[in-house]
Image: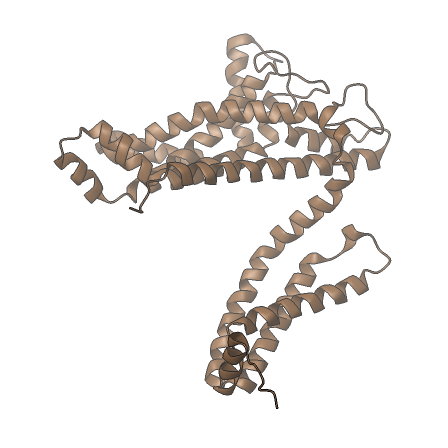
Amino acid sequence: MTASVVTPSAANAINSLSSGRLPRWAPWTILAVSLALSFAVFALLNMGGEIADFNIAGAVFFGFVVFAIALVVISRIVESSRHATNRFATALVSLAFAIALLPLVSLLYTVTVNGLQRFDAEFFSSSMRSVVGDGGGAVHAIWGTLLITLAAAIISVPIGLFTSIYLVEYGRGRLARAITFFVDVMTGIPSIVAGLFIVALFTMLIGSGKYMGFMGTLALCVLMVPVVVRSSEEMLRLVPNELREASYALGVPKWLTIAKVVLPTAIAGIMTGVMLSISRVIGETAPLLLTAGFTTSLNTNLFDQPMMTLPVFVYSQFQNPGTNIDAALGRAWAGALTLILIVLALNIVARLIAKYFSPKTGR
């Protein structure tokens, strides 16, 4: 007779089940099976329809509902009522997490499915000049978004960071309280107010009816600065005072302590705040429509002529589709997907920068 060989993983699973405990992989397996069943049911219901009509939010929601019920029932059978109650609480938390993610999952799925239809080389190499039907692209809008947002970040990030350093390291008394108050007020102003402010300012300086990319840059700066200030201020306050005191004890001046100790310690949170501010403004439409204007041609000069941006491009394609509505909607969805990918790429770059420049804790 040959002796049966039991692998360590199988032995652990048998021991877990025989001891009245579910193995660690059981909840994940139940979740995967529940989601697979839910997606299969919704796919059958959508059979014959377009892929864009697939109800991914409903599939995820009912998948988590099935997971919660199955986990509690299996836990009550294998374990005990006490463990089943604990599993039920875990399932409720997981279900709440799924509900919170439903809008994001549905949004990403809808934009991706509809945007991939025009995600081609022509879209990234052509503008909308002389295009009223099929074809065309958004290269002029992509360049406009990148240039305006980059210029806004170059202006806003140093101002916001230095302001937060002043509030945390130097600011005392009425001036610091006044700055904090006005920053809080600026954080909540509507974006169109920033655009109207820049339009009024340039009307007084150079006259009315002017559109240029730099006006859009300044409008985005008004929205970015308070976000950078508040996020950077909170991150700088989290730096332990013991680090500052240790640096001062070694005779390091305050400005060098801030540059070499405080900022490197808080760099990860600061970069997250910067990316949050960029994500806050890169999708703004109203202030850019008032300041940067609208054009169908490529313009890379921030100080002359209107400049198209991706949010305005998406808005214009939905609002004025031209002679071919389906082509315009395809360009709009592709523009929205491009905007999401730009934000995703910026966040990845920010994570890499924060990881590279953050202080190393290992020896």
